[in-house]
Amino acid sequence: MHNQQFVRTVLRNSCLIIQKFVLSSKPKSKQNVMQTKTIEQLLRLLPKNKTIESTIPNLFFYCADRPSKTVSYIQEPSICIVLQGEREIYLGKDCQKFNNSSLMFCPVDIPLSMHIKHASSDHPVIVLSMKLNLVMIQEVLARIPPQQQVKEGYLGIKWQLDDAIMQAFERLVNLLDCPNDTDFLSSLIQQEIYYRMLSAQQGNKLRQLVINGSHTHRISQATDWLKAHLDEPVVIGDLASRCGMSISGFHQHFKEITQLSPLQYQKKLRLMEARRLIITNDSQISQIAMQVGYESPSQFSREYKRLFGNSPNSDLS
Image (cartoon, rainbow, N blue to C red; front, side, top):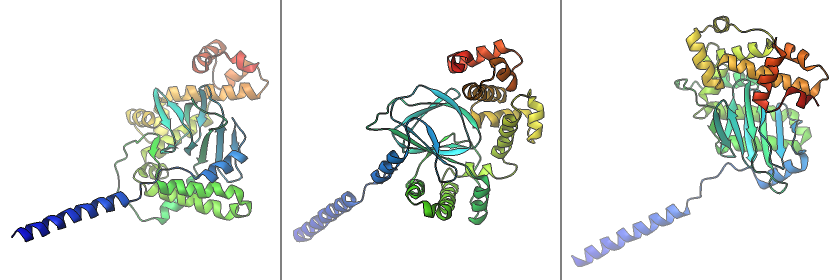
């Protein structure tokens, strides 16, 4: 009897030892970190503190080697990833911090602000941005098996970045060193990226962007109209009707996606376009104000200073 108890005790202890060994031997989960050689490749290629379009279609980079003030701009429909470092994104009253553990998904043109607190020549912040190709997304969606419908609750601009998506982006970036392969392989890798995103847990929002009649698709139509008719007054009832939505439903879904009301959204679009024109053109401030839809130059100057912290004349000089 004592021998049987001894054997059972030894076996039980042996099993515990084996179990602990197996658990400790499991590889640690991979982090979404681009390989050092790829980061070094980008640092050799990218100019500092400016946005550039790469030789790969729809792929942009921004590399900062110093902290930046808060910069306001219009983010086109894109997937954005901070490959190294961290940046803060302000959308409406919301502030989100982005590093290489998450991606930023913008389904429509979104007025936002960016702030980089920490960056240096030894450790620059590198941001990748890929503009959405809606035709390609539709083609990929048509070729993958139908998935269970998920309630179209809005998930925000910050999405979990998994290894498969990061690895596909790394292969895309590596094409910068292989210009002869770019034309053929870049579209294939971008298709894979869209496939990975459509198949991911949060992929329903990308799917809704290209499905006619979805809330996301309708709000996308509204933001496109506002951008194309910047100097025109907006009647919310007419815009909601244009999108096939009730006024209350239009307001709700518009604010879910942009974090702004339609009128706030139009104002930010106008002011950001005005700032671009002021910096890049020699036109008078009053002319630019009228060009973006302001009838009163004084009102334009007040709202411009409230958003950007300085007067239009300061940016003109």
